[in-house]
Image (cartoon, rainbow, N blue to C red; front, top):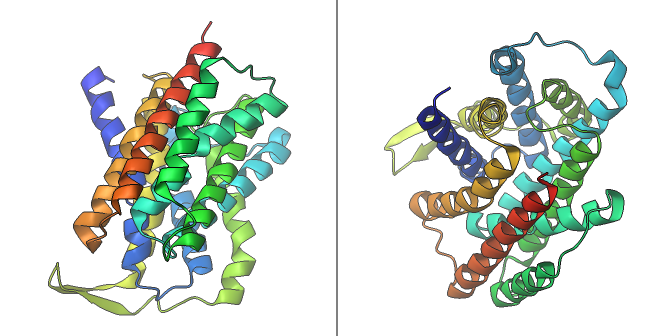
Length: 298
């Protein structure tokens, strides 16, 4: 794959990840969020099962000798996606992606506790910048405190998933991810049954588009575009780029694009404190990710 194609695909990946909040909100609450999460993982699983062999160049083989790790990662993926999508129902997109961006800090804490990651003197300044960003962004102020806190919690869940993958020597691009998605889907199925199927056949009129579209369309897009395609694209990109470089781009670009989509489609305008604090958090997260990447480099 040529470099310009890799860069183009990286842009598509970050954009697809940024559409999560858009598709969640476009369902207009017609599908319970628990069921929507199940639909999304089911669609992502089907997409990955069909396309992952193309990304890895290998046939999908059931991980008989790695069932425990596959199940744990599947549970973490299901939890992370579910909590993130739930946060999107409670707060504007910008709030969620900004407060979720604390994930690199939880990743370092977990890596320090469980993987022996060493701290550097520069980390003190990085954490100070992140703490100042949180103070400026005011997660406990305003009418979105619940969504802000859920997004912060999801940053910890995502960090736990990344730390476990590192501990087991895995990446998001591993061929086992399709099976992990499948197991995550199965774990969400009982909750989806209890919550009900939702109004999947309902249509909603969207004035900006001038048409009525079925709600189920956005559930499929959430699974295929926002989740399935993202994992498929990562598998291709990581054949050309180092995972550390992908993480550095993703930690900045995806939240910014998501916040812009929230403004463009739903007219969500972040408060000045959210913009200022968010910029500080994103800068600190980028800095920390870069420092950790340099420390791991031989």
